[in-house]
Length: 167
Length: 277
Image (tube, rainbow over all chains, first blue to last red; front, top):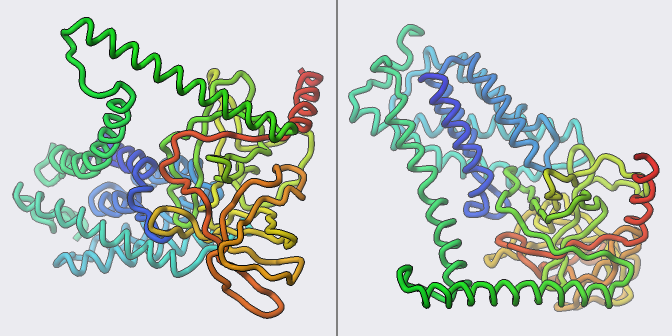
């Protein structure tokens, strides 16, 4: 995936995340659209460039959020690094496995953010709501990624080719 | 572009998925709002109809301005120690789970005060967040204009308001003779009215369901007597009782509010800023 498309997708996710979150709020939990896009991009885009993009995007989110600056960076960077490490051998064989992977990524992001917030501020977070947010993010990610996979198949792209050169 | 690089088509599909539902919602809201404002459909080619429509729009704007003046006059009479400003709520929400903030804006040459509360229909919506890391932390009230979350940008003053829906929201509150703290939970009922917790009470006087909770004003920065909500149920009994409070106003979907700030504190800050400049 080229850099311009990646930037466009991340910008779109940012705008959507800031404007449409009230439509998705459920008991304090909200899905993380930026994470959904970043996880998707992490499978295809170069990790170094994606890291720079994610750091920039997370700063924008932190400016909009009441959470301390750096908290979303602490959420996204570990996820990108982990996917960067495993995507070479992690062959996704179906939507079930993909959803489990996204759920783990959402939990990891949540853990990174809450740990950072706990370290730099007196504010705490309810673990149950964070877990609910991770599940919520996973459900929407499964939907979005599933549709994208289907679209990719229609175009004749084979998923494994995305990892070509690394396998 | 290489065949295995999912770029254009995938981008378009994701753009469609992400943009169409909210865009539809926003269009529906704006269109509905405009139809109400203009009184319905009107033929664009009919000049008389167009003029009538324009007349109706101007009358509507005049009515709106009169309502704003009434609102401000009422606050000036009832809360002479506060400065009231009608502000518009921007459609930007806090992206983090359990957190909730609103951005408010109004046309002003000076930045909005940091020690201010946002009210809607005489009920508390939230307080202007302070500090480099946002709200949730008590900040000493001083006349010094320190770092805060309110600023001016090209003739428009902006401020970020930590609402009662935020899980870290804290304010001193009172019901009858009982004073305590109201804390946010980050949760709300089906209509969007947030749940709050009223605890750390200074008295064991009885509190019953339906009792109204008001701001205490004892912190010296926020006005007293603003409605926060009403008691929904008792959560804890014994030496450290706690009550669940249902907030009076739903912060989501607000389009306008009144920002109240302390007149004396604001005057003191203006003097200091003038001396500095």
